[in-house]
Length: 275
Image (cartoon, rainbow, N blue to C red; front, side, top):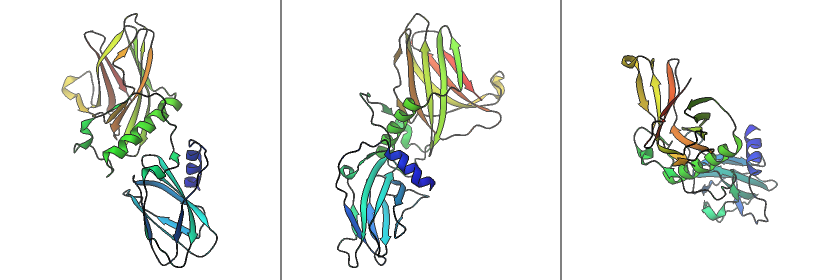
């Protein structure tokens, strides 16, 4: 039931338009395979007469549908990239087709709102490094998911966890959202200094120990996998919110998350510690 309502809520973000759904014929003897462009995240059949099986522990591109004689039903599938596919299901004693190869154009929408006039954002080359485990998903699919999920959080999330102020510039950590194998850090820079703030870099660390005692102060860098709306410049009287996607991490009792913001050709360098 929880999965059902999750899928229904996701469908609210999909534009409603007339569509002709394809019918998948199946029975109880044959395994009908559906191969999707993205790995399968969620799936639901409308009737108990039909089942759709897929690997929940290690997401894959293929799912198997079977059914018994009875009334027609439907199948709804959401991939890891947020793409939504919908089909009618019907029983047929003898099947002509046992495999369906789904195309991108077959989707009926995406579970996240479409981005409007958004500029192209960046994906770090470190995504393929040994320090990052994408759960077996290919980078191009994960990139699209990062983009959609980041856009959604920027639009809907108004949280505030910690802030740091220096010389009229405020660095604020709005929220940390854990999703799959990543952490989405929502960050805001507010400039009320009277001078434009040009960003040199933002680095992220997991720190251990007492930051006031250098001998016991250790920093573990957290590579940015993806950024959305990351600013090069924050003009005076401007607020800029953006998202940084990091590999999933946890903080122990003596550990903190540190954001290090450096100004290009300036001295307004800031460190924000959370926890």
